[in-house]
Structure formats: structure tokens, C-alpha cells
Amino acid sequence: MPLSERQLAAFADKYAGQIPFDTSPRHLAGAGDARHVTHGLAAAGWSAVSDPLSAEIVLRSPDHRYCLQFDPQSRTSAWWRLRAEPTDNGPGWYAEFGELVPAEVLAGFTDALIVPPPQPTGPWQPVTSAGWHRDSDGTARSPDSMCHIELRPLSEFRDRPSWHVETREPGHGEFSGPRIWHAYFDEHTPAHLVGSFLTALADRGPLQRGMYDRTGHYSAVQEPSPLRPQQVVDAHATRLKSLRAQARSARRQQTKPATTPANVGTAQPAARR
Image 1 (cartoon, rainbow, N blue to C red):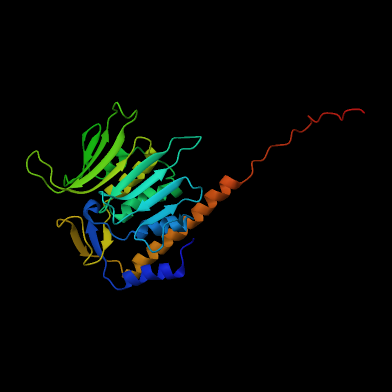
Image 2: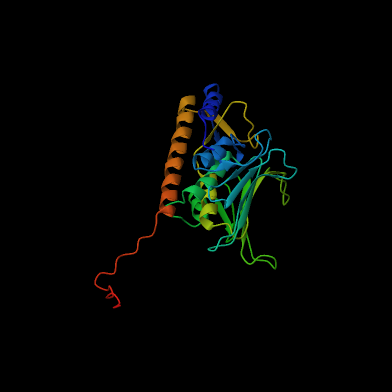
């Protein structure tokens, strides 16, 4: 079911009544508004298959390959779960995200499901370009050392490495502090999707939060944003319009019948009766 005018108006009403604050770094900005993710997928044709009166939201892609579950009452640390079914061209895969993963960062991942980046780069490239520290071939950490990325090696249970991202409070000595949020991508998650998530995560641009929105940690820096509330709403509407158009274009390409060029001059003579 496409987004309704009522749903878009509810989003606009929320932001019309609050002053946006630029919040950084992104890994400490807090969860934000889940509609950055769900509205984007709905605009691209994903449909809700969950009970509309339930707190849980389940969205399924038009081709039924992908399923995203958002469960704010989850008894585990994973509030978001995305599963991809296997196809003839590749295996299935799984990714999950904790409560305080910023919705805008998660949307970088889900948007890439709809519109893959034109020139995918290696997952590490956006991280190192943003000034994160590469501790080894398989790990990196944010400038404040609170967010860690790890490409865990092969094991007897996995034939390919998997990605783990964690944001933690500062620890003491060799001991890490309590975990704030996590993200996990199994060994078959496409590299361009992981790269899109890390690109959105390492982006130095601030995220907009309301004055009383929950952040991931008290050390997050908040300053009054130069953006007006309507500009935040307009940016959301522009993104949805772009996703809708690109998703429709991709579906048209997939359903376009293949044309076979005519074999000029090779027609066989009709059989004699």
C-alpha cells in the first residue's frame, strides 16, 4: 500500500512543532524517526504485511525476496531485522540492527536495496576517508573510539567473513564500556549494501534531532540547526519522490520483454507439399 497523505501529514506535523538540532557524531545521534526507513521502503512499493494494530511492523518487497521487521518490543537487542531469500543467482542473507542505530544511517542501507550506488566502493573506503582509524586489516574505529567496525574472519562455521559494528560507552583500560547499539551483516550480505551503511555512518554531516529526542550518549554534540523545520520535511519528501521514481524505473527494466533481432536473409524456404 503506498504512503497516504495522512501518513505524510503526520510526519510533517511532528517536525513543524519542533526546532531541529544538528546532532553529531552520527553514531551517537540516537534512533531518530523510524519513518526515514519505513517511508522510504513504502515509497518504493514495499507493502506492510503485519497487523496494523500491532507495535511490530513487517514490510515486504514487491518481489517478495526481502522482508524487514521492526519490533520495538523485541526481547533481544535487535529491533530491526532484514532477511533476503536465496535466488538462482545468489544465496540468502541476514542483517540486524539495535534500537539506537540512527534511522538515517539504516536508511542508507535500505535505500541501496532499491537504488544501488552507481559506483560501489570498498566498504572501508568511506570510513578511512572520514578520518576513522584503521587498527588492522579487519578493524576500524571512530575518532572518539566509541564506534568499532570489525570484519570477522572465516571460521569452521562460516566460509566467508561477516561484519560487526558496535558503539560502546568509553571503557576503563582494556575493558569496554556498555554497548549502546550494534549492527550485524552475515557473510553473504552484498558488499555494496555494507558499504552504503558505513558511508552513511561515517558521514561527517550532522543528523537533525528535536530538543528532547533521546541521543545515544550524553557526549553527543547538539547545536541549533540552520535548517527550518519545513526544510527537514521538504528534504524527506524529495527523497521519497526520488526513491519512488527510481523504483518504478527499475521495475520497468525488469519487466521489459527481451527482443530478439530478426535473422535477415536466413529464412528457410517453405517446405514443398
